[in-house]
Image (tube, rainbow, N blue to C red; front, side):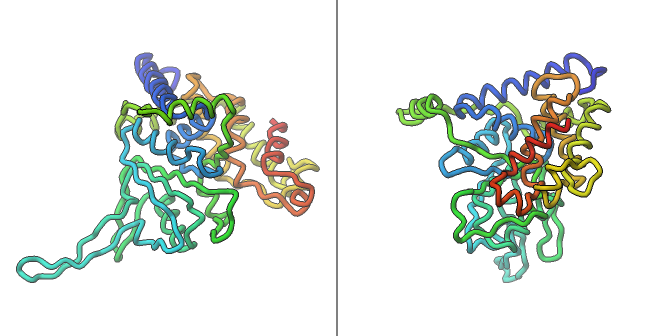
Amino acid sequence: MTIAAPEKQWESVQESVSKIRQETAKVIVGQDEIVEQMLVSLLCKGHCLLVGAPGLAKTLLAATLGQILGLKFQRIQFTPDLMPTDIVGSEILQVSESGARNFEFSPGPIFSNLILADEINRTPPKTQAALLEAMQEKQVTVAGKTRKLAEPFIVFATQNPIEHEGTYPLPEAQLDRFFYNIFIDYPSIEQEAEIIARTTGHSTPQANTILDAKGVMELQEAVLDVPLPENVVQAILKLVHTSRPDSEHATEFVKNYIAYGAGPRASQCLARAVRGLALLRGKSSATVDEVRDAALPILRHRVIPNYNATGEGITENQIIQELVKSI
């Protein structure tokens, strides 16, 4: 929303954002930062990779957002025997009463607004690619015919970081298609006590639907209207270029511990993310604070540590926190 936009329009956007937060809090205990990041990803039309141990409400988070936003939600359980046609759909031979035969397209679960790809790393690369193509192109091709996917179209993919046996890790080129890489940690003891109180009684709290697909797309358009000042653009460029070991902006730390830095897509995603964060926070324009807050989920899967970092136990998070100091 630009400063020149009508005041009522701005108030309407902020009212919708406030209601989304309130409804989410009915079901999800704590995880305010995670919820904010998922909302930013959705409002910026970006797909999201959720990484966390089992039982941390990754599926519940996605399903709750789908319910609140009035979006058609589908959960796809990724398994080693899942085929691409199980996701995108297939042509099925139909026989009419007259005996005529013809092929009819049976759409797969990908034809929804919000997709939860549960344990995406449990399926072979061929099936992963079918989903990732739909994420990138917003369309699928079956039997030589291309079909557009409905808007909005967002994928939340989950990944278990603990268990690696029988998994097919996503290559860096495919990881780069995800807007955010969100790490979900364990709740505090107070939050876990609240979780027990809410979920082990006769009833569990339910979120209300407050928007629909059209309303979500209007919010997505409002994100594009948030001003991006020149100093914020320069902060984004400085952060991304500093991550590249062969850049003139690279520090000794970067040269010692990073094998590959972030590409131009990181700059694009940061520009979108800071606008989305500013909108959610009720700011009239994006600031450098939003760049700092968006850096970790944007760069976590785009900055590749080298052997020195691995040998010394330096993680991606530590590297990015060091990069943020450059701005």
